[in-house]
Length: 417
Image (cartoon, rainbow, N blue to C red; front, side, top):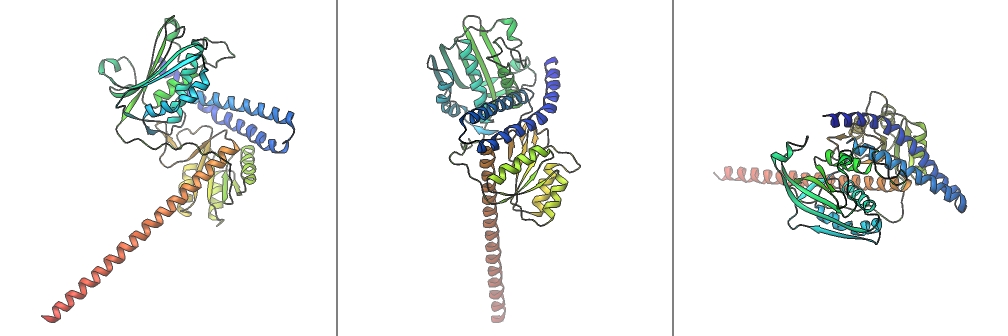
């Protein structure tokens, strides 16, 4: 009960801070990225800009970890076979751990699927692997296992918010120094760490804990001083077929010539977004809130995509803007952005179906790729709807012809009689 109350308090505090903090990071990051073009060729200035962007990335990671612990991050779950996902992480893990740590992966046959955010699962496993590396002082053996598991009534009675049933289990085991019993009770607390300040923020295990709880799962740590540690992650079984996971697009960043309506109440964030999109070749229209954006939509200006912040002042909410805009412009695409979504487009910790989100702070490259992705999806939907319409028309015409033929035949039969 005390842990739940502490979690809720931290969640409210984190959510209140995250939106403004990520907006601030977006302003800094965006202007640095725009500045980088102006200083191209000046090696010293380029180095300083990259260093500042590195600071923005660390700040963004810190905010993301806090939101994860507080169960406030927007998850994008997919039906995943975690065995395939873990095998695909092999190269990434070896790079992160170094050549002195032996990595072994053991995946059981007949492994069940689970509904989970694959990117966040990768982050969780990577966090645990890095913790293990530090516990082994850069030398030892790391074993990652994936298997099916059943948590019975007796076990779940000892753990709140956990249901009995079938789970997929991932175990990360190291041969490190182990964790003393008095410390083991505190390892999930945010900012608690036994490492030096320059090595750790104390949010790695807190992030893993929050992610597991938000995903309906469970985490359990077993450790013995001098013998090593095992961290077990449990995710509920999903009987649906595995989704096809598409990797992030790579290659040259491309813009376009479509018209984008930018809706953002923070003046500085809005101007950064407008500048980035203009550099990418888009025609840009801007509005400071959802009500103003709807006026633009009603003005008759052709709009291909609405790029809108989730949390803005005013009576009209961003999801309502998206719905009303689609009623007026059925072919318009919508891309949301936010540093904290609250419950506007995320429910039960998961993005609403069909919603596209670009989290702040975002890079110029991420913005460019996400917009092309959203516009391409909208074009596919338009083609699919067109095909359905043609099929419906053909069915109607065929039915009409058949009815006419039947009516004519009946009339001829009556005349013969």
